[in-house]
Length: 366
Image 1 (tube, rainbow, N blue to C red):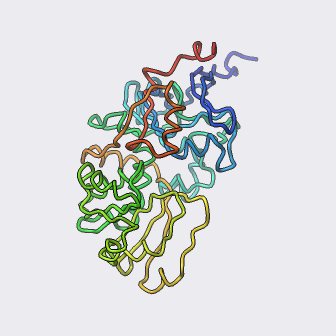
Image 2: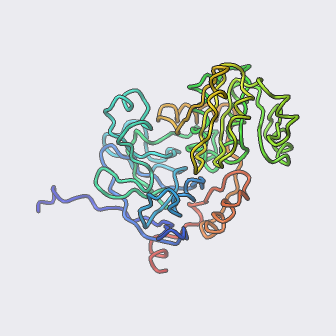
Image 3: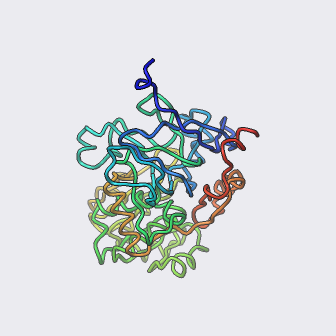
């Protein structure tokens, strides 16, 4: 073979991988592709832990390919760019969210909605264009097409900004496309966890009146005092639910549990919208009259395109919106997953990859 025809050497990287449905994460050494003409190589410094990571490593969605390295809330620094890259250079502060590629030519891609592309390649547990399985951000570095890299404004901290690449765009996008990003709107946020707390912050940044709806009355102080919501409704309190009936323009539903939806739809004004961003395990039961009588809409939303993701992170930096996090070391990740399963986190775990993930040689030795 000619020297010119030889493939570029792949890059070694350390990672934390699940090997089976137990979900236990342990050190692994992997190969990342060489930096192609349109690629950006990134040294990962932080990676948020999303609840979907927990579902995935335990194969609860029945699509796991092992070994699996999860993580799609990646923040770090550019180390190398391909010769055709124009938007980034070495040293830039950047992030990678839920996608690392798409077909880049379909109607959705051309309209800036790569998240709707039939050929979307997800950041982990997906098949890349070269036939390899993608590995996520619980690793020391990653190589990504420049279209799927987000620039972090200087005022956005990498650790608190990382979760916005999933949680942030997940709640920002439905507010934008369902008209809830207008000052004076009354936005309900159902559930106060990793998604919900960010939804409160974005809704306030848009100038909305924000009411947190939760089945846990103990979260009222957090909602009003810590996060700045305007009101709180305990969903199991009949008097509070009755008082809030017909008052909200929209509700961002972040809850992943199966709960009665009809009483919550009753909180909406005529023509109001509930947008699902949580993923309950079982089908949702909705009486038709709960939607039909007052022209209400039940919609869904899944992350957002790359232009919207950059827009979201820029607006977040402008308004001081960032996730409330608990930074952990790589050796704590399995404990963090156990705590996440019982909702024992306020509100997002973020792994300090840069300072605590072992190098490939150390990982391979174990």
